[in-house]
Image (cartoon, helix red, strand yellow):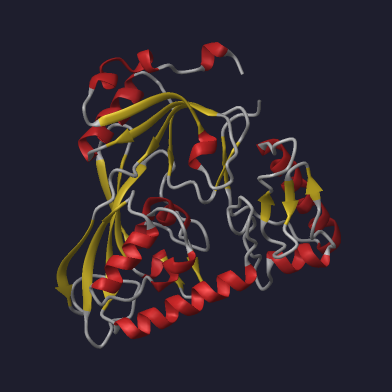
Length: 329
């Protein structure tokens, strides 16, 4: 990496003086991902308001500075060379509000109307999935029980259509609002978001700021039962005591990535401090006590080897569920 390619705080000019922006230079991305891997971001930015975000995006566009949005880092692998430009995180934009009751004629929804009707929820991108689930449960609203198995933030969950066997974001989303590099607020209805298995058509050139959900009324006891069952299921099948992103690969049609990896004899396969979990083969994890300390290159090398071996054994090309960003060292 050439030093001339790096962005410094003084490159941002008057943006560094705004009271509604927190900017930090050379921020280690290992502090902001559950894998605890990755080199530094040139500038880490946390807008306090939507206006601050708009100013940041337009200011960076005017200076030809690259912008990368990240959520809670639960599905993110950052390369050892770090990320050039500005990395923006919306954790300070985390409000969740309940609005009007909705009837069957109150606009399109991916969900089936519940007998008790539905309620509109507006939630900002930086809201954690756990906080959204807790708010819905408190208001007697279902539809987001699947979030008990999805760590992270709403913005990141929207972009990748996160979910579990209980559901996914497409099931409850009415619209998503984002900001483009020119500072324009863009609202997309559900049909325009292109939600599909662990992906969407929400542009990477825009920053998701909030979403409108439609949640059905549901008894709190039934909500708690589904949440408890999902959490127990995860506890029984997930590795502990390691840094991880959950599932590394998407399940191919009609099969499971974990089954393919295990049947190829790859459980326990290691590269440095990165290992195919002996507990769940689709979890490629990082051992925090390994010496020397694992690097992103270890995990990326392990990912490549697993993909190659599964393709060789089963003729199946595994697709990453984890998002990879940044530069090699």
